[in-house]
Length: 532
Image 1 (cartoon, rainbow, N blue to C red):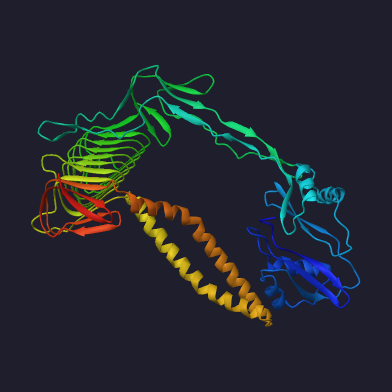
Image 2: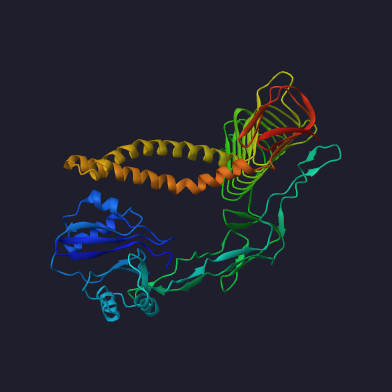
C-alpha cells in the first residue's frame, strides 16, 4: 500500500495510555504535530510531553509514546469535518479506534453530515470507498457542490478603422508630407458603425448546503456615441447619418465632430478643452493649452504650450518648446520638428529632428526627414529609435533608451524598490519569530506581553508577505519583458557620435568612437553594433 499517509492510534494499557504512531508509506504525507496534539486533547490525554511527541512523529518506523492515562476507557473511531471557504467541499478525516472501540458506520457519516447542514452533493461512492479501504489522517471529499457556469461579457464590434497606427506619406526626397497623413476613417451616410453583442449571464450552481452559487457578474455594455449618429430600434447597432469620418475616443464613437480654430490659440480664444477632435489653423501660443478627447491637428507652430489628446497629435510646423512645451497623446504624435520640448506618445513618434528634448513613445520613434538628427536630451521607445544622426561632434549629452515601453519600465523600477523594501522588513521579523518559536518548543513560558508582541509581529509579516505576493506576478511579467525583448534596436543611417549613451532593456553602452551606418541591438546580454 504505497502513498498512504502517516497516522496514529490510541493504545490503552494497564500502565497507562500510549499513542501508537505509524509512519507514512512512500509518497504519503507525514504527521503534523498540531493535528496530533489537538486529537489527544479531544481524547482527554493531556499529560503528553510535547518534545517527546514531536520527536516520535519524526521516527521513520512504528513507535509508541506515553500520552497520559485514560484507563480503562476506550476510544472510538472518529470523523472530523472541515468545510472549504467557498462552501463547495466537505473534507472528512478519520482517526482509528483503540482496541475494542466502535467503528464509524455509513449511517453515522451521513447523520454527521446532516447535523452540519450538509445535504447537497453527497458522494456515496467516496463514502463506500473509505468503508472498503480505510486510510486515516487523510482527507476524503464526501460532499461536493456544483460549480456555476460562468457567462460571457458583452462586447462591441466596430465596422470602421479603430487602429490609428498609420504612417504619413514620404516624398521622394525623404521628407514627410504632413498634408497627406491618411489617418482618417472615412464613412458614408447610412454606414453601420458598431454593433453590441449582449452578455450571457451564465447559470448558477449550488454549494454543499444547497444554497445557490451565482456565476460571476458579467459586464454589460451599451453603445456610446456623439452627434450625427442614429441608433437602431432594438438598441444594438449605430449608423452614421452623414458622410464624414469616424473615430473612437474612450469607447465613444464620433462622426465628423470637429472643433475648428480658424487662427491662433491665444488671448482671443483662451485655453481649449473639447470632448472631440480639434483642428487649429494657426499656431498655439506660449502659455496656452489645448486638451481634446480625440485628435489635435495644428497647422502652424506650437510654442511653450500644452497639447494633450486622447487620440493623435499632428503638428505640421513643429514645436519650439522653450523647455516648457509639452505634447502628450494616447495615440501617435507627428511633428515637423521637436525642439526643447517634452513629447509623450502612447503610439509612435514621427519627426524630422529632435533637439535637446525628452521624447518617449510606447512603440517607435522615427527621425527620418531631410535633417533626421537627434541631438541632446533623452529619447525612449518600446521597440525602435531610428535616425540619420544621433549626438553631435560638440558632445551634447544624448541618451537613447529602447527595449520596453517607458511607462512599463517606470512601473518595473517602482515595483522592484517596493519588493526590496518589504522583503528587507520581512527578513528582520523572521529571526525574531524563530527565536521565540524555539523557546516555546523547549518548554519556556512566555509573558502575556511577549505573546501579544509575537502576534503583532506575525500579523505584520503576513501583511507584508501578502502585499509582496499581490504584485509578484506583475513584477515577474515586467522583468521578463525587460530581459527578453531581443527585438529592440537603434538604427543610424549616417553617424552616431562619441559620448552617446545607448540603453537596450537592462544593458547600456557609451559610444567610444563615431560609427556610421549601423544598428545597435542586444544579443546574449550585451549590445552589439552591426553595419547596416
